[in-house]
Amino acid sequence: MLAEIIAVGSEMLTPHRQDTNSLFLTAGLNDLGVEVGFKTIVGDNPRHLVEAIHNALRRADILIFSGGLGPTEDDLTRECVAEALHLELFTNSDVVIALQERFKARRMEMPPNNLKQAQVLEGAELLMNPNGSAPGQWLETVIRTADGHTHRRLLILLPGPPNELKALFTQEVRPRLADVLPPSFLARRVLRMALIPESTVDARTSPIYRRFTDVETTILAGHGEIQLHFLCAKSTQEEAEDRVDQLVELIEREMGDDIFSSDGESLEEIVLLMLGLRGFTLSVAESCTGGLLSERLTAIPNASRNFLGGAVVYSNDLKVGLCKVPAKLIQQNGAVSPEVARALAEGIRERTKASLGLSITGIAGPSTLDGPDEGKPVGLVYIGLADEEDTQVKRFMIPGDRNRIRLWATQHALEMLRHSLQ
Image (cartoon, rainbow, N blue to C red; front, side, top):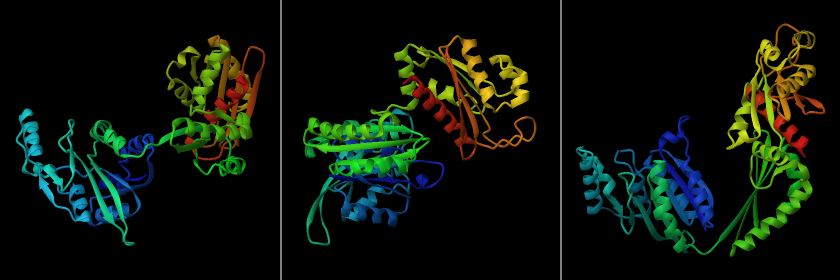
């Protein structure tokens, strides 16, 4: 079964609003064994919306509409579906009563245009909406395509506000879909790798995953990591899981320790898990990243079990005062240097009595115009990692703008820590 999600609303074609409903709907459909083949965003234009409906009817078994069920002139989903399918719209008296009672309970007079929300497609089943004024609609129909064949289609109209859509889908749509869909079970896995080019991952893994034609493989790249998503649909859950496991085992054998997670965990989650398994604590000293590393770690629940905290030592005075970096060391080598990275890692570790001290110092941009760091390139980053026996320092050149340099510096720091803990 193939589905298409049609999000209706001109606001989602601006830089200010995003279609987040489709993410929720995709997850729900996937759980039922339905593949989402298309997502369409259409503005409040009746001609465009009718055209989008015709396109969807040709290529998808299930059409789910999000939005356009309100009382205003630009809420056009009901009318456009009726036009595309050559159906009549009828006013449902039960919905009219429910709308009147809703406004009465709020001691408000109902505007006449709210009666528009009581219009129901010919042959549709109402999906009553306890969280809003616009009911959803469920319509099963048959269309005839240009080749003369008939095809069954299912159209589901849902309101746009996420709290209304999610409740309606969970309580009304999902049980109905489970009753009418053929049985299908999905298995999913996500492998995550840090700081490896997408082309490298694909060159090494594509000869493997291409052999598994019944497993859908997607490669996602961004924020300093590569993700391999695997999805398999079978008639039983065991068969689907077994097929994905076979593929994952071969990929893990090929990529080895480059894979930091086989079940979708983030890099910071894995690092905190490894710290816990070793019984270690961690503290950090951040300069150019300004606390971004600490933010990533503390976003994980119960991080305090192993992450003690740290310091944002942006100025040289704080490097000296909080982490005991010798002022002469900064004067001679500059704050962005392997010597200062080493001293920061050792200093924060000693100050907090942590098992490990991790430091980041670098130039995120713009370049420094005077002092010992003058002439050092934007993107130069040094990361230090200290334990009770030794301190290691690594140099990185990270291209990009300020935000990218800061994010990738934290990614390098976490990956450096992960490899050390292994």
